[in-house]
Image 1 (cartoon, one colour):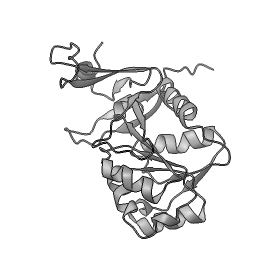
Image 2 (cartoon, helix red, strand yellow):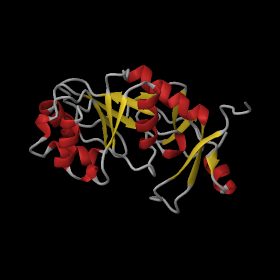
Image 3 (cartoon, helix red, strand yellow):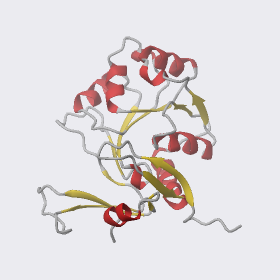
Image 4 (cartoon, one colour):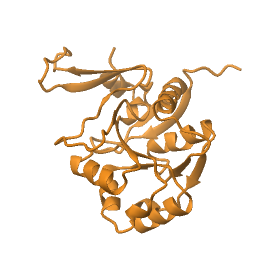
Amino acid sequence: PSLTARHLAYVIYTSGSTGTPKGVQNEHRALINRLTWMQQAYGLTPDDRVLQKTSFSFDVSVWEFFWTLLNGATLVMAAPDTHKDPSALSDIIRQQYITTAHFVPSMLSTFLHSACVRRCTSVKRLICSGEALPAASVRLCQTLLPHAQLYNLYGPTEAAIDVTAWTCPIKYTGESVPIGRPIANTRVYLLDAYGQPVPLGAAGELHIGGDGVARGYLNRPELTAERFVP
């Protein structure tokens, strides 16, 4: 009865690509905001079948689990290391009639260049995040899987999975793929070294605000104070 939206939902460690891995404390309100936005944006139904192939040490797995189950869709668990094998991926997508799947862009490229990709006719949604999505992959995906809508998402572990989203338009001809606009109840700023907004067209550092921002780092009060600023 005492549980509130500000209680912790989960702790996931960052990859450590910019230093020592840090445990990120994400609250229920952040996760619920992210999942509610995703359902409003992409409309999962009980007829959908979502492929779960992300390790639970990465936060993409959180929406694979809970977005699916919260909305009555079917969660299909891939065998370990299936995400590394395009042929095995194709088999499970076809055999289980997968409609929705996530790909890191580098794995999407490998998958698209495999001989079996055209047989994955059940796929309706392909969601990319975790790396920059090349425009060439967008065009190849639209050629080989014209029945699937491709989405590009961006977000750090420190902000409940994703904070911006972009829907790839049909027959995209751009040279680069944007990360899109902020999701619900989220604000994104480009600031200079003094914390001031940069002019249009100028480079700046991305700052994220809103309901998705985590509580801070586990047992790292000094780093939390440095990175989670008012």
